[in-house]
Length: 202
Image (tube, rainbow, N blue to C red):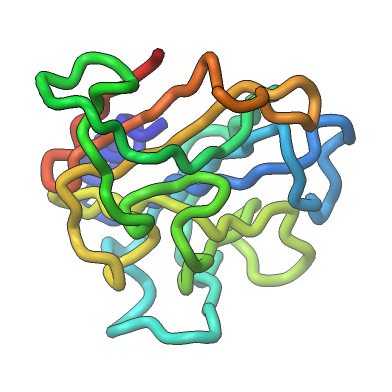
C-alpha cells in the first residue's frame, strides 16, 4: 500500500495518506469502529486539488481533513492477527539485512506502532471519504503522508523529513500479541526522501 500511495501521489501531482487503525479482531468491524487489538485496518486517500488540504503549522486540537476534498485510492484493507508495535532500534552495525541489523528510526516521530508517534495526528482523516455528513466508520489518527515528489513523512508537514520511517507489526493470537521476546517481528521501513520501501524480518 505504501508503494501504491507514493506512486499515485507522484503520478497525479498530489498528496496521499496511508492511514493505520487497529481494532478488536474478536469482534466484527463496527460502525463506528472501536479501537482494539489484532486487526490492522489501512486506507489510502488522496487530495483532489493537489494541496495538503490543511494549511500552516498545525496546532491542537486536531482538525479532520475535509472529506469532500479527498478521494479513496483502492479499497480499505484489513489484516487479521496483526498488531502495530513500536520496536526498539537495532544495535547491530550495517550492512542492514535483517530485523536485528536494520537502520535505526531513532525517533518516535519517525515510527508508527502501538506507542508511536507520541501524539495522534493533528490532521486525521475518515473512512469513507466524500461527505462530511454521517458517521465515519474509521478515523485514521496514524498515517504516512506522501508528497507529489514522493517524499514520505509521518502524519503531516509538522513532522520533518526523516532518513528512515518505520512501521512495526507483530503477530497476535486473537487479541493477544505474541509474547516477548517476539519471534516474528516485522519492520517496514521507507526512506523519507526517496520513499523506498524495505521489509525486515527476524
